[in-house]
Amino acid sequence: MSDKQKFAFDKVNFILLAIGMAIVIIGFLLMTGPTSSETLFEPDIFSVRRIKVAPVVCLFGFISMIYAVLRKPKTQKTEE
Image: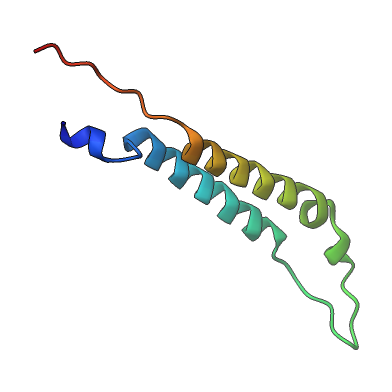
């Protein structure tokens, strides 16, 4: 049994996981912004970027991470 067959993931799986995690982090960064306080109301908390775009970006990142985990690595047949 070769060393590559011992691992459940291959290099592509790890790259896809890293890309998915980066997309999730970008989504969370899109959600950040000024906050409202008891004395000052900030209308930016209801912006399209924070309540529609950022959650969709995070969802896309989580879906891509799930795909990276479920993706079956391609096995290479070696002739003996």
